[in-house]
Image (cartoon, rainbow, N blue to C red):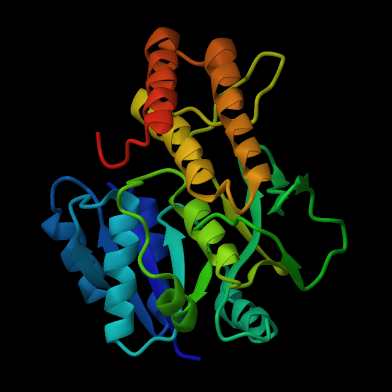
Length: 294
C-alpha cells in the first residue's frame, strides 16, 4: 500500500512547523493544506523546500474542505491509503509502519483505522464510542488491549482512510464546515458497512483544544473554545443525529455532548453569556436543519 500524509494547518507555530518537516522522511508523499486566512509565503517556501507540497485552501469548506483538497491531491499522486493529521499531533517515527500493519489486518480493502488517542489535556486515552441500532456505549480501551478494536466513531487526527473507502463514501461534508465532520464520516462508513476501528497497538499523543488551567470542581472534560466553535459543536451534533437516527435511533444520545458543553460553559468558561447563547443558537439551527458556514 502506498500511503500519503495530509496535514491541516491553521496559523501553525514554529515548533509545529519544525515537527512537520520530519514527515517526508517517514511518508512518501506529504501535503499540507493551509486553512489560514492569509497565505504565509515564508512558511510555504520552507515547507516546499523540506519536501512538503502545500495547498493554500483559505478555509474554503472549513476542515472538511481541507480534507477533501488534501485527499484529492494524494489520489493524484497515486496513494491508496491517506493519513490525516492536525498540526498539533506528535507523530512517532514508527507510526506509519505500525498503522499499516493494522490496516492490513482489517480484512477489507475499505477501512477507517485510527490510533489509540492519548488526550494530553486529561492524561488518558479517548474511549471507544460504539453505536448500534438501539444501544450506544462509551467504553475505555482496556489495559493490555491489542490489535483492532471495532467502534463507530474515531477522531480524524491520525486516521488512515483507504482509497476504496473514500470511493465508497465520497467526500467529507463541507456543509458541516467544522466540528463532527469526522463523526459524520464515520457514521456514514458504518451505514455503508465500511469497518471503523482503533488500532490499540499504536498510541498518538494529541492535545484536544486548549487546556483549561486549574478547573474548579466539578471537572468537565471539555476543552475551551470560541463561542463560534461552541455553536458548530452543538449544531452539528444535532445534524449528525438528524442524518442517521432512522438507522441508529440510539445516536440521538450523541447530543449529551452538548449538555457537557453547557455544563463546561456554566462552570468554567469565560464569556459565559455569549458562549451559552452560541450553544442555544446552534441547537435551534440544528433542529431546523440548517447546514453550512455561518
